[in-house]
Image (cartoon, rainbow, N blue to C red):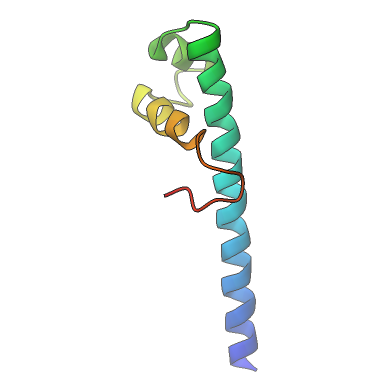
Length: 75
């Protein structure tokens, strides 16, 4: 019985991690568009997204994730 619960926990955590990876990849794609296609600086992208939500460092990390395939490891 406990083994089944443990499998449920690990499955749910894996699903959560996958959802986070996909959401961060999509955010990175949008940030790539803002900075490359629209020509915004990283600081301008931070400002447009609300300076409390992102930092330049986080924008850089998310933009790198934009190159990961959907559902990929992300790392």
